Length: 139
Ligand SMILES: [Zn+2]
Image (cartoon, rainbow, N blue to C red; front, side, top):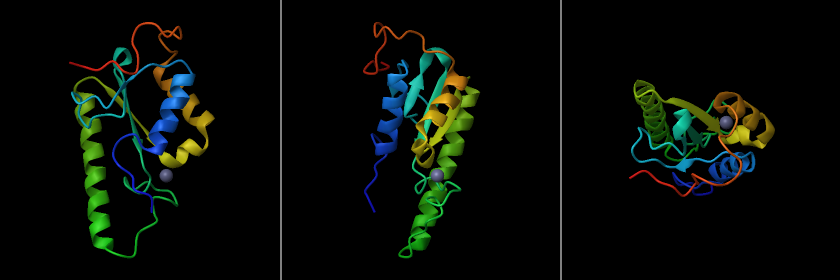
């Protein structure tokens, strides 16, 4: 199994490329927000989490693939991840943010993911490339 860390994973990079190409600009891994969302759209008060299907227990074939070794360890770990995800979404909502989850398996159909996020986020603020950039970060 490939090693997957919390940040800059393949699915996350794929989503970032997809949204960037569509003209969206965002902050990454905002540490000031609950759950440290992968992508943050401050003006829209929207946060996007990219979830690996295995690590976050998605109801899909990939998410259901349970390792035989250390099954109890993995199921506890995944349960903790899911609990954290739920908590982050709730805390964000309290602060007036809307959270969206994008699953790894969904990114096999990028056009579908993009359409869903475009509907959620509205049009990009500006496609000119000036102003805020992906490298901007909160103080
Ligand atoms: Zn999945």
